[in-house]
Length: 227
Image 1: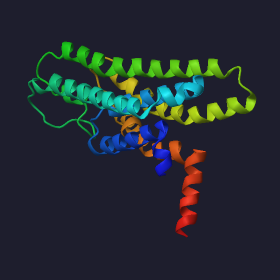
Image 2: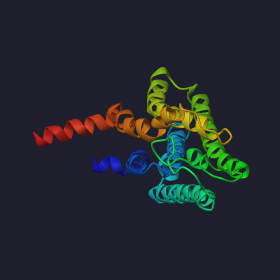
Image 3: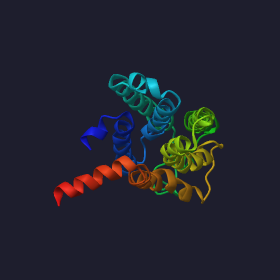
Image 4: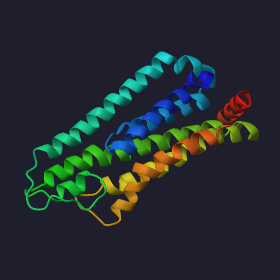
């Protein structure tokens, strides 16, 4: 495990696990969006530029990427906080949701929230949509690059990316559905929110680790050493 943590992919996975822990505990950080994007970049470099992978994905660059992700996540979350903190609320103080999401909260506002709703779409909806498009484009480039590979190499390259695509779709599809529309709430929103707040973080260890040959070999060796 110590050897794996020095590889860029597992370096990012450790921070993804940390963001999962924060996400399921507070349901507010946006860090996971940015880390998923950086992990797609890591897979793009590994498959499309394998000879330069070690140079491009140096430890210094990985540290810089994590700092950028944390900064982006903080700015993204803080902007939503600033959008709602000055909104006047009156009447009921209970929202029809299992966490304090932006749209259910704005539903309690007693002022015109049209402009704030547009800002929320720009802040959350468009960021999620653009990030999702960038992620999908990275895999289009990967598929274009591996078309000249042998069947065995293609299979290996695709297997390293399939788990990431599963997480991306599981996370972004419901998030885009909720945040890309005007300020309105549906009863189904609570179900869709489960995917990117609980289900995706819960499945990350299974999808990334238990389906990964290196991780399984490491866990098997560690078990043999203990027993």
